Length: 288
Ligand SMILES: O=C(O)c1cc(=O)[nH]c(=O)n1[C@@H]1O[C@H](COP(=O)(O)O)[C@@H](O)[C@H]1O
Image (cartoon, rainbow, N blue to C red; front, side, top):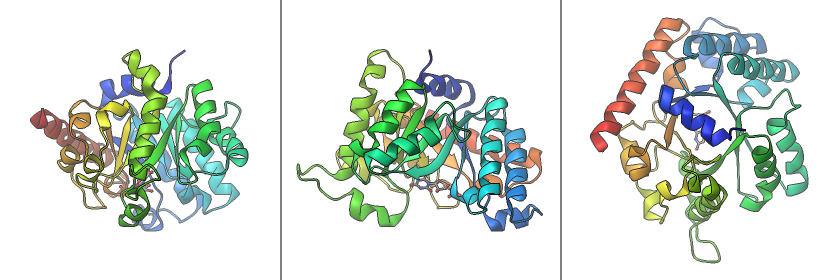
């Protein structure tokens, strides 16, 4: 019996915190000499997995960039998840799902159910129908030793209007989400293990999370940080975004386009990842 948080913690200890996104954008497929098709997406994913197995803790396939091809794209996504798992990589499916409780049950079964071909080690969820609406996914993830990453402070500028707003209690919405994740992760914290309910916090947001009163380290959540590379953030900025949680190794910067642009050669993909990992280590070490 090993929780997702414990498996992730072990993988981070072995490979570091960098996560690589598998985002088969049309422009990247063209640059790789691949068709903008389900076969092209599957080919790109296969090369990325082959190049990065044994080098990173986790990969993050982006669901919509496969779903846009319909059933063949979904089949390619299923194959991608299976291949990554077979090659020893943890999988985080970026599907950003969130719905009313009764239909959330079905989303939970799709991405976290043991019988589902779309099941991943973890899935991204949107809490903007209310954190408690995610309960079916939280419950199934715990039962099946999988995880979730809940959007808290997203990397896009439009997120602020909702996420920084005050709740009826006066506490900002994003801080309320962080509090809820912390409560889910408290039992793991008591055992000294990373929690299985992660948060998504953009590397682009500056100090706003801490300014809103979030103590990231206290959430015991793995903290997925998109925004490094193509969205303009640097590894160095993670220090001001996360404070002590960054030096503690809780932060998982996730990079898609800035890595994929180095392909299709496996050695170039590997080199891009090694450089990002070295940068992450350097910044973390100097921040201590
Ligand atoms: O949940 C996510 O993965 C996510 C949340 C967020 O706030 N911002 C964000 O960019 N992402 C995803 O992270 C990836 C970032 O890709 P690059 O900007 O190419 O590195 C994309 O797949 C985004 O959908």
